Image (tube, rainbow over all chains, first blue to last red; front, top):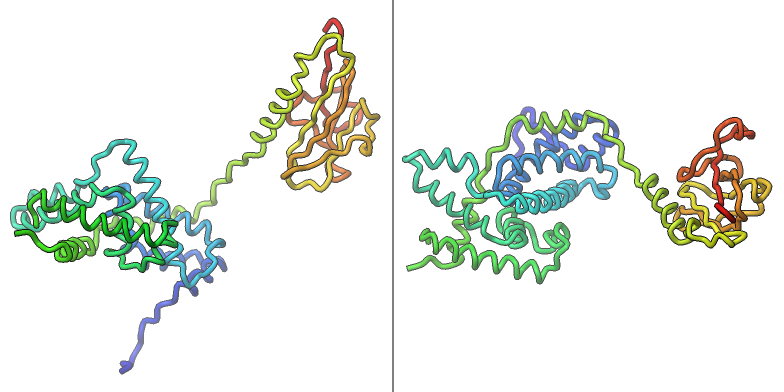
Length: 188
Length: 161
């Protein structure tokens, strides 16, 4: 049933992309606002570090804006943007690995760990972060896109360039390894 | 007793699907960044031109030619991806564009000429009208620059040089 009164009607991705292409930079702000949380979550879990994740996210938004002419299907702007972020996270992740950074415990987790009333939940949060970080990047990527971002294998294949069979194997291995790592940490 | 794998995965996924904190200022930073003009892309063409000249010099090695040789073969190369025609003109062909037309492969134009020892002024004639000096060679200093257009100079060593 439709309610009476004023309803906020959100513009579709395609409409916003067309407005941006026509010179309405402000319309891009709506796209950033629409995708920031979901993409930010992926980047954060993929990279394990808040600063790296925000840098990758910001860079992806800026790159997407500057390459908007190459977005063939404006209705699928989100998927296209995801592809840019996935690639950006790969680059940042490889760089972080070269720096041999410890990227499991970010500042939030350390701060939170001090709060006794949330200790059990934070312990679990920390254990999940650590287990996730121990996965090979391609396993972590496949697991996050499949189970956390809830994408179909075909969509993940399009984003990552990997075949569906390889992706299924990566997700399977990721699930097995997560269970093993959490068991080692005695959380399951 | 351990949890079943599916239960573990569900708990992990539930945890990972929680919202994460993103800097509220990120949106503003993005909008600020896109409002700035895009930095110009660094062109590879000058480097490619220099590399082409270097390669041609290495292949033909004009400096290692026998002092007895009366003439040597030189390859002239110009990178001009936008050009539709390029000719080599110079003292050695009476500045006649028909005598040394250049051939292209992917925007790299090249031709080969025989040069006896001596000093030659030359240039490239692009699209039949645009006169260009060789970016990989010395330019002709005034007053030798008699045509009032940019041109380059090549010196071919001979006996006793």
